[in-house]
Image (cartoon, rainbow, N blue to C red):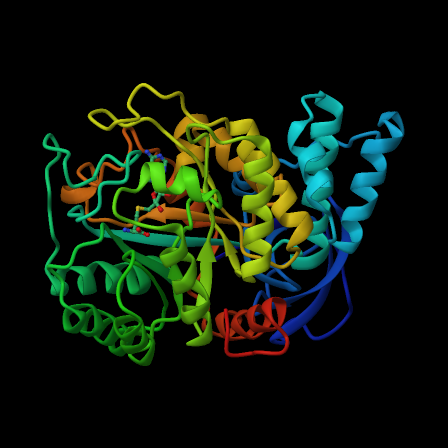
Length: 435
Ligand code: SAH
C-alpha cells in the first residue's frame, strides 16, 4: 500500500461543493502545491488532508496529521557551501547518475558530519524529485525456516541445532497473504523461506496461483536458488518479482561464507530471471568479514549493472550458534550511506528500509532510511505463532506497524484505481505492466 502524506488546506477553488473532484491548494513542510480532493464535500480551508501524488483522499484531524509528520520528519537543511570542493564536485556529478568507483569510495569513506548530511539530503531530494512523496509499505511472509544451505552468517543455516523449524502448509501461506491484502490493504507481498526443497515446484506454483486467484496483489518470490524451470512456472502463475540477494560481489568472500555455493551460479540466475520478465530485487550485506569499502563500492556498481529495480541492502547482524556469532554487526551509518548512493545512481529504484537496519536502529532506522533515499518499508506479515522462529538473526525489529498502516491508502476504490495508474507511470514508463 502507499503511504499518504498530511497537508493543510490553504485555499480552495470556487466550484460546486458536491463536485466529486475539487481543486485545492495545500501546504506541507515542502511548501505549497495544487492537488485534487476526491469525494470530500465537507472540506474547508484550515482542514488537514492526507494526500498521495496529486490526490487528497481523506480528511484527518490535526492530531492525526501530526502523528505521521513525526514519523516522516524530514532532514534538516544542509548548507552545501561549507563542503570541500572535491566532495561538492562528486555530489554534483551525481545529478547525471554516473558516479564512478572512486567517487563512490569517496562518498562511502567520509566520516565528516556535514558531508554525510549533504549526501543523505541529496539522496532525499533526488527521491522526492523522481518519486515525489511516493512511499509504500510492503509485506513479507516468512513461510519456512528450513534451509538446506549453510551460509555462515545465517541463524537458519542447516547445521544450526537450536532453532525451531517450521514449515507452513500451502493453504496457510495463502490465508496469510489473503488476510494481508483484503484485511490490511497490502498490495505487494514477498514470500520468503530458507532454501527448502520439501516444497516441490508444484507446491510453490500452487501457492502463487491460489493467492492470485483470490486477491489483487503483486507477489515477490524469495526462496533462494531454485531451477529456472521452477521460476518460469511461478512467473506463469502470476508472480511479479524475485528477491534474491547476491550477498557480496567479492567471489572470495562469497565462497568463504557459502560452503558448496558459488557467486557465479547466483549471478547467472539473476539475468535469467530478469529475462523471464521478473522485477528483480537484489543487494548485499554490509559488515561481512574481510569486506572493504572497495568491495561495497563494487557491490553498489553490481546492483546498477544488473539493472535491478528494488535495492535490498542491510547490515549483517551476528546470530548465535553460527560461525560469525562473534563478528561485529554491520554499521547502520554505512547502510545509510549505501542507501543514499544507491538512490543517486538509481533514481527510480524502489529502496525499502530493511528490517536489519530497523533492528539495530529501531524506529529511528525507519525515519533515517526514508530520509536518506529509501522510499518504502517492509513489514512482517508472518503469522504470530511462527514469527519468532524465523531467526535469521536475533531480536528482529517489529513495532508501530499499525500506526504506519493507518496512513496507508487502500480502501477508497476510486483513489486506488487512480493511484495504481500513477504507480505504473512513476516506475517504468516504457512498461506499464510493471510495478
Ligand atoms: N533462502 C532465501 C532467503 C534467505 S534469507 C535466499 O537465499 O535468497 C534473506 C536474507 O537475509 C539473505 O539474503 C541475507 O542477506 C539476509 N541475512 C541472513 N542472515 C543474516 C544476518 N545474520 N544478518 C543480516 N542479514 C542476514
